[in-house]
Amino acid sequence: MIKTISPMGRYSKAKIVNGTVYLCGQFSTDLTLDVKGQSDNTFAQVDALLAECGVDKSKILSIMVHLNDIANDYAAFNEAYDAWIAGDEAPVRTCVEAKMFSEQCLVELTIIATQE
Image (cartoon, rainbow, N blue to C red; front, side):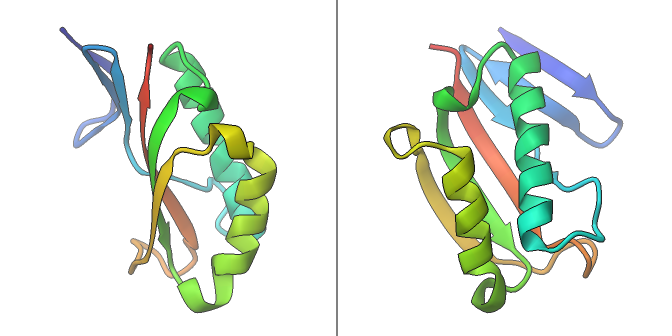
């Protein structure tokens, strides 16, 4: 069974398939913030969307981190990340530099979680 969360035309905010939760790329709603601020804002959005899917961040299996400028923003992102998720809950993670839809977008997260 496939459950769609918040379809929005070209994409849905999330899909749940056989207990696996797939979130679309999440980024800050305030692109005027620095990377730490955008990260914190994005983590809050992830928490809310996961709750809508019936899970929390302890159920995250994988995070794909896209940073606009990995050389300058990696340390600040990791500071925010470490405050958001405990080491014993840390999912597998990949972090890459990516050209974003806007130069002001500094971080985007793609997440897979489980309902188990």
